Image 1 (cartoon, rainbow, N blue to C red):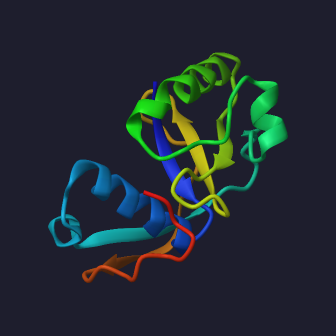
Image 2 (cartoon, rainbow, N blue to C red):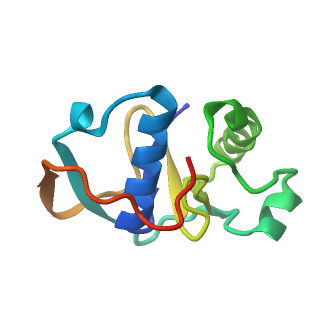
Length: 133
């Protein structure tokens, strides 16, 4: 199963980006330029795991940064995919105030598409406040 990850806003997007780069030891300039898109999500039903109580109902703790913490989340995601959900919304590990949307792809198809024009970012933005790496 593959997935497309989206953020609830640019602060979360950049927090997740910086977290990933920090974990891999990659300087930000080595990953630029980046395309930033907005997506329309109308009509997509996703599982809501956006708070501590909802996470606990499926046996999960709030996410923390790091790839080593992914397996329990991946197991829940795979179960939701098997049940026919289009994806899930969850707290961002890199920015606890933010949310991420994981959309499951089926045969390379994503259930949503970009809206508007791409914005190309050529210089690293300031790291968002409240982020964790």
